[in-house]
Amino acid sequence: MMHLKIEPRNTPSRLWQILSPLLALILTLITGGILFSSLGKSPIDALQTILISPWLTLYGLTELGVKAAPILLISVGLAICFQAKVWNIGAEGQLTVGAISASAVALTLPNLSLSFNNYSLLILSLLAGIVGGIIWSAIPAILKVRFHAHEILTSLMLNYVAISLLNYLLQGLLKDPNGLNFPESALFSPFATLPRLIVGTRLHFGILLALIAAIIIWGIFKLTFFGFSVKVVGSSQGAANYAGINSHKIIIWSFLLSGGLAGLAGACEVLGAIGQLRSTISPGYGYTAIIAAFIARLNPLGAILSSLLMAILYVGSELLQIQQRIPLAIAGVFQGILFFFLLITELLVNHRVSIHNL
Image (cartoon, rainbow, N blue to C red):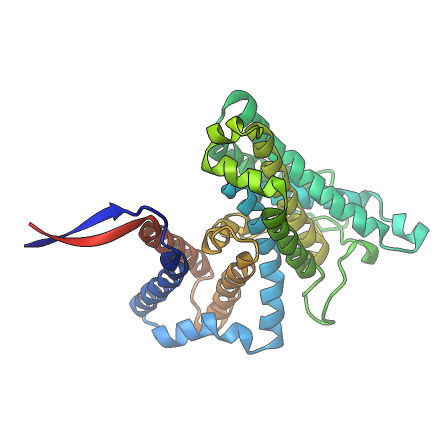
């Protein structure tokens, strides 16, 4: 009689590091097909709508860029934290505060660019978004280093504080007085809006900022002592301290960089795709970026492809709702299934399955 046994590997398998995300994706598609069949829909038609239809129209292609931009910005920031084994789950809140900060500057200084006839207001608004994300991420960072509070709990809870702050401001200080009592701000001036890459679409310069950020963070990992220090701290804080690396400083800087990029993502959303501050800024980009970061193996360049994959699920689910009347929440279901299989297949990277005779 034979039985399966899971044994640890001496070193992680490079082959399974490549194959596990692909296997997770295949298992997700199979599970999705079963799910659509249970709903009385053709699995082939439904999967084709999600995965292929977004590539067939200009609207679909540009919306992929719109949705991939914030996911990419956040995921490359999270890659820094996760490499250091710092679990920042608060990117959604950092995105929200970044959006609030950018909007506050755009709304309170509307005549700044008119005075100088340039995009100084846009630049200040983007910087305000980065600063907002940094300040919000500094809270769990300081709590972890100073009081040993677990960053998963503190960063996650701050997401809900940020959303409550957003709703409060949209009912008061940042509410559009001419908005017929809707919880939204006034529209931003053209000088505080990210230029469109393609006229007539929502695709804006935020996607270029995201690509630049991915390249810069990749360079930091490969070429700087800080990038090396992040990996050492992630491997062993004790070894890092013994080698003269201040692990507390690395943890704080990892949080701040991650929060700044999430804040920039929020600023790009309100200054680019939306054009005003609303109560619904993000469909959950901060959580989706966690999946994108892990699919990319915490590689900033790999995050470009994984963020695009997550964007396909968002856009494809919208098309699925329109064409086949399937709820938009199917995107969240797919993300959850994908993350579930990703965690399972990750086991094969550090473990091997062997067959033994009893």
